[in-house]
Amino acid sequence: MLQLSDKWAPRLLAQPETGMGYQIVRVRLHDGREFEQATVVEGVITDIQGKKEIPFSENEIADLIVTGYPR
Image (cartoon, rainbow, N blue to C red):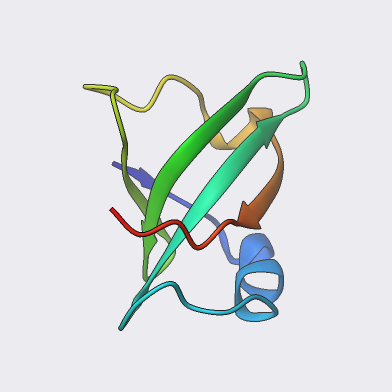
């Protein structure tokens, strides 16, 4: 799991929830890599579909985009 700092709150709050209390997001990193279907619950990236661990740190994140794809 990866706890996000408060700086991401406005970005996440401006986008719709995917389901009750969570968002499915695309994580875009500064180096251009993207990770689809990351689950964010209360400011925590809890998992990324197909990954056993979160393969980046918060300072590598350029953007979080709600895709809304249900699992």
